[in-house]
Image (tube, rainbow, N blue to C red; front, top):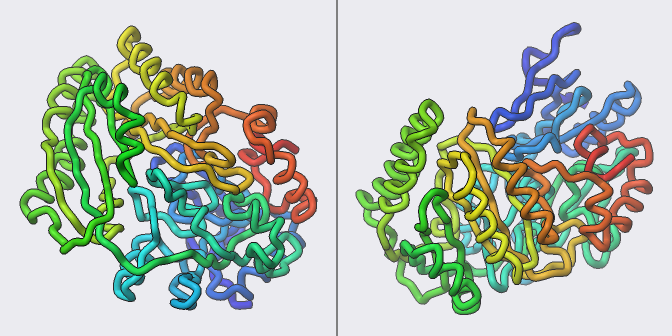
Length: 445
């Protein structure tokens, strides 16, 4: 079918190394394919099955787990990209699975359209982002996957399955966040709406105040999030709400200082110093937490929701029942304060409404997220282990694409519809063509 391969065509006896964005996951697939059509992909899946090789699709590697790692056939879907169709009457856009969110957002803006909500990074492919449950923050609007209205899936037998609420609805209910376990997504149809303006208000705020007022801020804002700087009592809050416009983006100098110099350039240097001399981290944190000033600006959604992330890190994030997030965060702060840990990255807190996707971290419950990060190359295990102990005590569900140690036994308790998902997997992929070590751990045999 004319399927191209990467890395010198994977000569016999050689394996092309693959690693994720953070560098904490590596793999050596037997071959790498970059299909240029859905037919190419179907043929690659059939051939892998014949050769007794597992198959995994990988996006841009922004997951911190080994969800896409394989020693079999690694599918790079980047050539399957671009908008297929815009249906203004239905309010939908259909895009190929390898489309990068950044390209989708810009193309939609040119058409006067927008997603309702999105995460803060837009370097992922649409299939990678949705398959792992990527989300932003929202009182009423949910994750990117919750905005899916239809999808196409190549299954283990090489068939192309079309799924929506009306067509193969039981697959649709699960495959919107499928962790790559049910097949390879080839196209996604998203709900979109006419482009609108968001006014962002960023403001420093003390930890005690923001936690005491958390429910108030959540109720009063369409999109509320905040960052706490460990080793300090300081936070930075962000409130995004729809407005009439007009666009009033940050000035070029102000934007460069906040987004490039402070959030990337100086932050990179500070983290490098902290990695070399951990004792300096609390002092750096106090300075960093005071460096960002209050600002207000207005722009179209993707220019407000997203921001560049050039400082590489490793991340763990847990979804908690929203009513438990403040207590869990206070416990996290107390743990850091009494420990010898040195944490140079802020802790991020966001929210999401309940949704109806089987393995969504917000499935069936109002949710808040706590994300902890460590600079790339610094030991993260002690911090993440202590944080995970707190999060699991609060009925936490880990993000599928971020570091965690949970297994199928835990998820069977955490997700009421876990059995529904695994039964569907048994039907669609009984031989585990799309399996790997990560899926064996989180979904079971």
